[in-house]
Image (cartoon, rainbow, N blue to C red; front, side, top):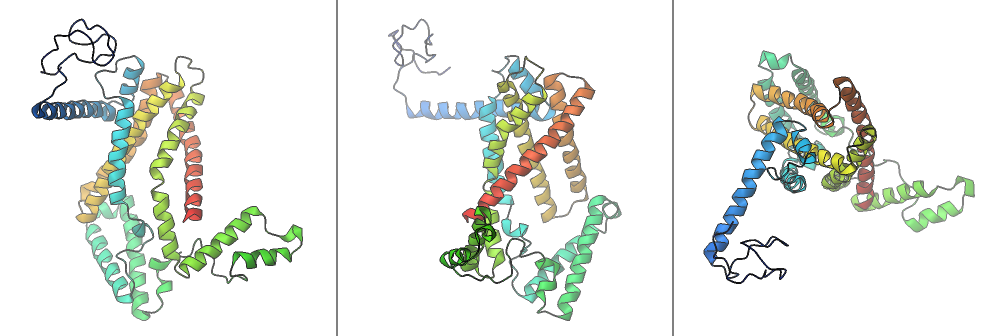
Length: 371
């Protein structure tokens, strides 16, 4: 409630209804003087921010530590004490993707390292990585762990690359650093240099030997890429991958109602659950996953800046906690036996893996063709 003086008139300025008391019983607007001082605006703004923050952090506490609790409370009608799920999703997803795009570098995903372009630059990058891995592997517990084995394999490949550079600084194509750079571009020469030339060649072939619509699109797209990027496969892949990564929020948003539909199919015999209930459960689940992945990114960033042995263990813990969290959320919200919940948990993983794989592949193809 604000501290502004109440109006003497009893007509609501918003809807015109008669007001008995301080608030309108029709629209809920407070019947106070419409003139506000600057100080009132400031105090109202501070109140809204602190009120939102307080409700947000208390809701997050229940969200992360009591899987399925918030969705259950919402379904039972206990909603005023917690942040609205839709508001929470908007805030959490926006916060997550802002940091996600600041952490993820598509050039790093293509193993471009530090923008190395010469043998000397590449050698320096490899030496820096070699020193970092050697430092990490000094810890015996890390060396014997699963991540330690991977680091040893990476170190071996780096040593092989350094030896190759020492033998021949011009054979950069033999380095693992530059391996698989032409995954999506063919190295063979085309017999045509324009769309008109391609169509002309197709017209000379019998109808049964002409390219179909799909192959024609791929051939013309490959021609367009070669004309625009030449032999620079990395340039094309970098632009396409960057566009694909920016589709990620859209992919997650599209997958949300699909995830809720899958849950409705898995629990079709539970008539007390409507599609909207599955949707609220999905929203809470997505919010939790965004926060968990954000923590994982922070740990990865911390490990990249300065190595701490406990970071790997903490990151592993969060991976297993996320897997358990989904199962526990399903058990608490849908209130089924352990056996049934675990079976549906496995089915959910299988179906969602197929669906998400299809969505990622679809958006990646779209990225390749819209660059």
